[in-house]
Length: 273
Ligand SMILES: [Zn+2]
Figure 1 (spheres, rainbow, N blue to C red):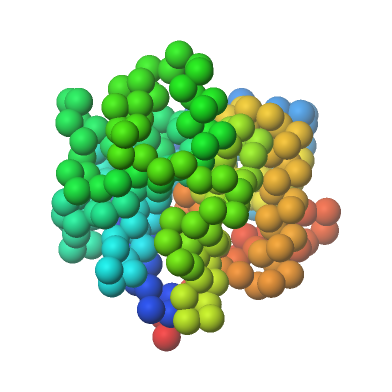
Figure 2: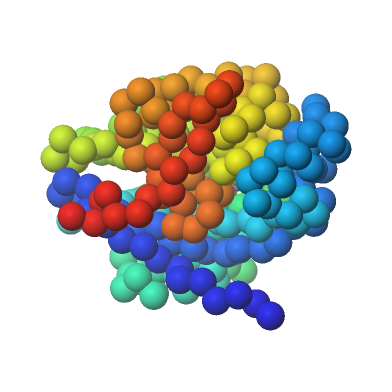
């Protein structure tokens, strides 16, 4: 059977309304072919078992985030296809034409897939924001996804560098490794902070407890591990809530240090007040 899952979760962050949107979810076989490329089968089995996880299957989640500032509706990433994100937005009470800005954290297919449907932009009224380094990388890479979904939108795109702002209170931080120009975003309103960590970690156990485990999708594996340690040290020390694009839905939680690595603490009700 296909499991039924909720597809949106909203909470207030200061003056902003933040909604995580489940644009898709799928099981993947043989997770050790993706996570822990540099550890043995025995080590992978032991870590899986200790975390109550099957070792032959991992469930993947694809979770764009919408930040509604009142004046703007800013969508971070778009899922695998237009249908997934459109359905999740509808369930949360939004239409694609409500979206004023689409921010692309990086340009893997599961983040840019919802930008277009049959060559027509999904978000008719949106302008686009992405990292300059990321755009330049894919623009020179002869990549079908980029050519079909991103390059046609380039004239409506603004390009950020490390520390650049989408608008006041939404700041880009270069978090390279997963891709050359992968960016995460610090969202701040009313004295509250939230880190949109995108694909800094692609699994809540394998990449948190073991940040140095190599991940197939990380283009520069050493840089990705260093980025995990830098951002998780910050998030744990400052006790900042974060949203991870591939964390189990709703993708929201906290990070604490544990042993040589980290531990993902799912949100329960901390941000409901
Ligand atoms: Zn991804």
